[in-house]
Length: 199
Length: 199
DNA sequence: CCTGACAGACCGACGCGTCGGTCGAATCCC
DNA sequence: GGGATTCGACCGACGCGTCGGTCTGTCAGG
Image (tube, rainbow over all chains, first blue to last red):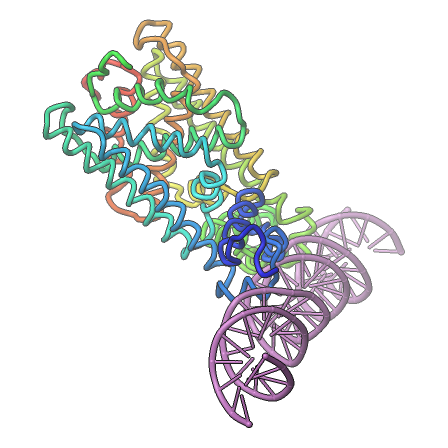
């Protein structure tokens, strides 16, 4: 048998890497761990990826793109800048809740790994921040919120989201979704949006 | 000569460790680096500290205590819950700006290092969060802000602060202090405080 | 002379990456 | 058609650098 579960080897390695990195973190995870988890071999690993570092970078890109895509499609079906902002918020929370591994890697394990990784992390962060920023600017233009430093706002929002999600990842606690309404209210208040009575 | 610069060896090692960890991060920093930077030896290092891990943990504790103490004294001289909150905010920002190494270690390098470190990090985070929370609760009780989930708020605030500071640490940009007013406005708005015209 | 602070050579484990090898499938030659 | 040959995906034992930690030695001071 060439492949198990019909998945090509490369994908199996990638999937295993997500699991292992999420569980043990970048440094504690050995290539050997990934190899074992994927049921392949060291040879296969280095056949598809030039290094441990590169597979992690690829993973960060892929996972970020996945979330980004989810956000974009969710946003597309909403009308009005503020509605789009709220939609994006919802998707981010939901995605994090459903795919903890993904969130763990992007928000926790990818931090403080040195310049190469930090660069990628900042790149991803600013991609997201720019989406938020764009719609905030639009909302300001439409008069839904006062005009303000949207760069700072998107940074602060990313940080707040990050922390709440990370805390939930580590300590567990109530389902993340239940915190959405209050978190949303908090964030919207922070930009001076008239909280539209909820629902 | 027993000591250089009059500082006892243990302190020299500690100081060097701060510098090295801040520059290279936990994993990239070798014990050898710290030894060299401190002008001491491996023997001295292991004479005072049982392991690399332990010195990092000690550092986290010390640095956190330093900030905490600064916050507490600053808070003591303010009257009224909201004033105390604003004071704490100011001190945190100023301390981060003045001691980048400290901030880098606490906010960036200490993330994702495994369970032992994560535990310490959470402990520190919740120490700070509890200070914020306590005064927010008091402010709510005094009627300055509506009552709300202050646990969530303090988490979100920590995250927002963290991100803004971390971003500044890495990418530089305008002095951190200049961002205080807007950041403060943002955070206060988020809890529904009437922004009291500042200063 | 003894203790404890310190020096620095050394050790051993660990983990990334390599490299010669296997094996099945596709292609070629008769 | 079928044996020979090529090719690339894949295997896994090993090499070798790195790095935390140890251990013996030295020396100053009491």
